[in-house]
Length: 392
Ligand SMILES: Cc1cc2nc3c(=O)[nH]c(=O)nc-3n(C[C@H](O)[C@H](O)[C@H](O)COP(=O)(O)OP(=O)(O)OC[C@H]3O[C@@H](n4cnc5c(N)ncnc54)[C@H](O)[C@@H]3O)c2cc1C
Image 1 (spheres, helix red, strand yellow):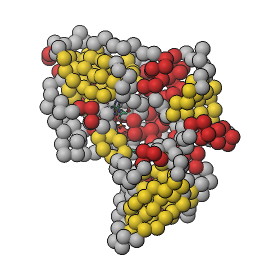
Image 2: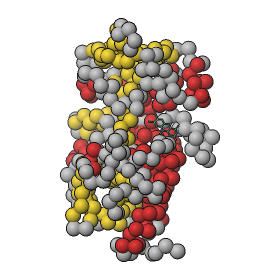
Image 3: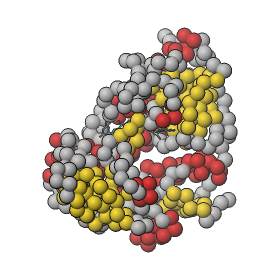
Image 4: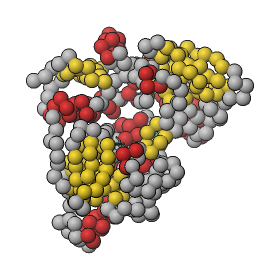
């Protein structure tokens, strides 16, 4: 048996996924909670050079983040799966809901995703998903995942690199050099955060610049951090970090544009210091981020802020890079769908934040996932391409 140690924090969804990977393989591991164990928190930075979790050590090899590709390389995964009725790309609210619907219709269902839960994992307080007065994104997604795991659904943690067509089937190639085929596809790959557009961003990711406040927030206890953005996501992160960090700078390009519910909580937080009409002009630091420069958009005046951590919450781009020209996209690079989730290619459907549908919310993504699944079923039955029973 390999020796496996996982450094994690309790609220980190990616840590949960790493642990689920080893649980599924039946491989025991030592789990160290760095939110409680200060020494371990220092150790994880020393061995990985990162200010972020999860960090997994397998027989001395340090694996940073939830790196499904490296884990599959080390512990093996079948190179080619059987042909599925439907292949769902993405396991956020849209993909997971679609999977439950297609599996319940008797379709053989394959889900391929880099993580389970999608963006909702990043939200610490969801107050607009019906049935819950308030629920943490991680908790809500755990419930989605449980419901999926109760059904006959093949779940593959992997990155989709391309989607194409061959011999009348849809074929996906993945980051671990596997290929999967299906008779139909639902694209539910959501969106990813926009970058700040300043030099050295890549260099500082995990070294002070975080893309998951839920995961890495506890590592900045008592420190100074900045959150960039003026929308709901930025406010959520600033409020969350105000309970962990000593000081939170909120860096807003124009003015705050968020829901009143967040504004009300934000106004009560005395350790959030807000700068409006400014943008981040430089990242400062050698190995780790130690500060940023912000520039006044009217006067051009620049000032430096010393800090330990930076959270960028400045908007999103759809995850459609792997599609090339296979389906039609709009100007924002979102997949164009009709009211029933059909793309311009018969057999390819799409749902959730990756699509041209305006509302980007969990309840909408889940609803669209359900709609796409029902359309897939009807399409497969019409095509005579599935053994599942016809619609009642
Ligand atoms: C901080 C934050 C707070 C939020 N708060 C709320 C809230 O309070 N209420 C609300 O309704 N909404 C909220 N949202 C928005 C909500 O989370 C999204 O609208 C919703 O998650 C969209 O679901 P989705 O399934 O379409 O996409 P996503 O959630 O983005 O899921 C996409 C899935 O696709 C996978 N994927 C992407 N690219 C690839 C690839 N190439 N290969 C394999 N897999 C891939 C991802 O791993 C993921 O599993 C919040 C979002 C954020 C970031």
